[in-house]
Image (cartoon, rainbow, N blue to C red; front, side):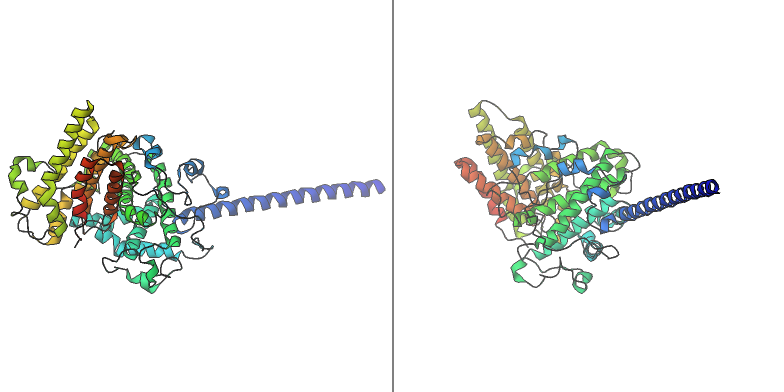
Length: 492
């Protein structure tokens, strides 16, 4: 009996052990299933929550180790532009723009708890639909793309949604950091304030300095959107080509709009140091677009590639006719009139200085010569549009729309490949390149009806003037007087 009892006890013990093992295995499987479901949910709502931690990274998440090495980090101050070669289009992928903001400036929680709605992101999306998309273009067909096609793409693509929210954030911020025009706030922005956006709406101390917590939200969407966008670029094909094009347009808008916001937060930047990272970003994106131009011209975003005045018809017109001030269209702003009065003479002096410098130095910088030829084409195209295009359309917005159709804002993508390299190294040749860049910047200041360029390039021209003044080159200082005088004309 004792042997039987012992045998039974041993058998029962083995069954109990096996049962415990089965239950343990079942619990592990359930736990793994729950974790998998939780990860899938977190991936679906990524654009409404904060960035995932390193521990929660899943197979569908872009490699963050590379992204961490690329990202600027919120606490890093801008560095010397000549040392930031990582932003060059030749580096292979776009890099985040740099903002000067302390890492502990937010002081609050921007990521909602599980089950909470992210009211800030909902407000940003609503602001894009109610305001931003309606003010990206004066051309009805291009505006339709911004109002319908791009938002529809963003609803299907995480990278585009981040980039869309970042752009909407800068649009909203542009109203909160200017005293030159009344704020155009979306109704929902006023009816549902958030701790990061609306707490300081009526605080006059924040009219010129953007709330750091809100800026943190914008930077986060920009960086995370760009991180995911790099994955799309790495897998570029006919299936995602239009998504990449839409993302490129969102990034270009953000790059241009960021200048004024970043200048407001550049308390620790060296004086007179212009920003170049936005040019590198745009050139890299435009390279992708150029290589796929035929397909894009036939796609759903083709209206974004059609500019009716982007031509060289000005070459058929006598130069004296373009110089004439009496034939300038009605509806031109005082700043545009000031530009037209002095553009040809200032350009002639700039080209003449380059020629005299080449004679003195015994060499000609081909990149500068090519940049001056591009500058001449853009300036003459501007004068041609102002004098001769659509004479029956003479309201200020009509003039601005014709300038937009001349694709004057696209000069950065056509800069010679090595021109930006001539800005480094110091010396008179480098300073001349900065003066040429200031003359290009002046084109952006003429677009007074476009929120994403208004104000930002005025500051860049002032920075270049300070840099030229420090050089002590009298002739170059004289060449900077004209663009500064045009910027000094108060915009309408």
